[in-house]
Image (tube, rainbow, N blue to C red):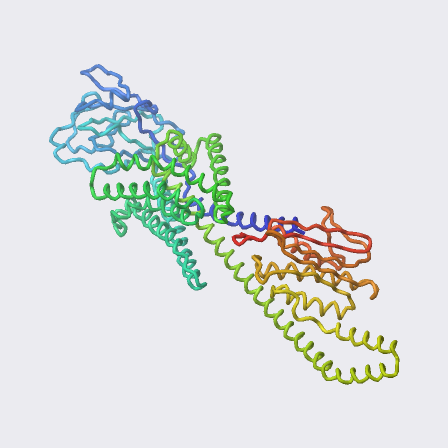
Length: 631
């Protein structure tokens, strides 16, 4: 039965994970594009297919990228032949993004320049110095290529007026530009919307904890992280929507440290044994990282300190993992969720790394490769900071909701225990009234009994006196005892079982010696004893009336509560393929033994079952500890 239940739980978990993955995939597709612009920007080590040169008089001299980078106030040229593959890719425009004067030629024919009075031709261009009086804005230049550009030589002429780096050149199209902007905006909007929804859920979760009677203020840390990161994402929209300055607030620049450290502080607050040790190792770096980021926003030149503080992030994460594992070993329920979730995430990250190594194309493949390259060189850019914060935030949200579910289950369990107590109290009151009535009858008839015994004694009828006394004794034994032991739950359950056994004609005896208080949850004690005695009564009732008996033993030795029930039995005991005892009553029965086994294991014990031809015995020893964690 346990295997079947576990299988069902796994099926439900994978079904939910599949639904979540389907939604993520759906929205993920809105951040991708089928094709992307061709990046033709040279770097210091790669010409990217450009022929680089300058003219010294009539002499053409080749340049390396580094030589071009160091060229000042001298016209240089970049040339390449446009191919048919570029036309097939839908390329219709060339985009330039740099600050210098420039001119574009196709087969030596000028078709664009940002200098109004440009004179000359390739090899003898003259960029008038007067045009430099107005600084170039550095805005992106987009020029439409003529339809017949295939096979023609594209030449870019420019000049490094001041330090401005190598030219940034892209081949694209208007449709592709729009698609890329849309995808880029979606890469901002979708995470921001997801974080905003998470913030709303956290607000609801926090209010629910208050309504339930115990405010969980640590949830506010996650709420702050979600809100700040939402606004931090929206702030980046200003690049694509320059007229929208709603979130252009410098303080939102603190989104990075808050989004990373708020979940870490949340986890720190969930620690028990190692909280004091871990506190300075977390809070001091978190304080200084946030302080340096804030000073940087104010214009103070502390960026070296900001970089150094973020370099400590990886050691801090290692420390978090170490203390999380230690807390998990000490049975901390929060970290029994966090550590496995972190392990699964690590496996997924390794899968991403392997996948990115196998596939070299696409925006996200390049993104992942860049992230791992920076991680392995211990560089801490925004990519790693954002993903660290995102994973920690998701784990902490998962923990918060699981803890909410667990609290709700515990609340329902307490309601169930209260209901059982009320039922037991009602049964005890009923039995008490019944016993009181029987005692009143005996008290009313006692004088008659004495008179009859006196008459029989005077007549010398000693045998009749003995028989009469035996009959009176038997009648008195039928009155149920109201006080079995000091423990109220056990007392109520056993008294109720005695009544049922009496009605079923079962001889039930007991040896119970218990204190008034036991460090076992009432609901566990109720469920164990009620299932134990129910099974014993049902089994004994199947025998002839003169063979029906039950013996119950309960006592405390050292730190263990010993419980044993023996009963007469008949028939075959059924087992499943694993050797577990199953009920002979049908499909919807047989949960009693499973419930008893679960409770026994919860208190670091097991069930010992002895099956003899004429009897059935079940015993256990539940560990009694005041700090017993039975969750």
